[in-house]
Length: 65
Image 1: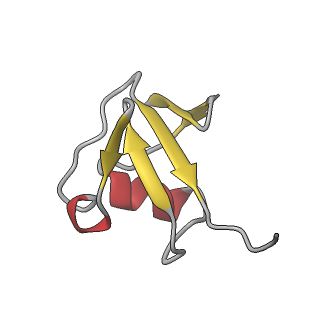
Image 2: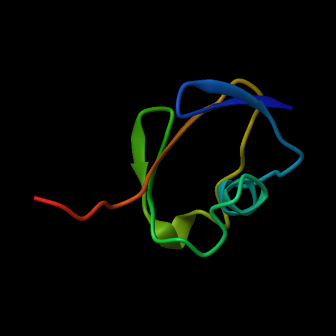
């Protein structure tokens, strides 16, 4: 199915946010996620289903100053 990941249309086979993260290479990385503009806590990713057309934002922390 096609979903938007960080603004880019992406084809995924996964059915939950957690499995999408794994499929696109984030696996166990510490990231923040939002699904359709709503923050999604890490403990809800495994149970949150993805549907065609959804918008997933993935943000990794950065160091710097």
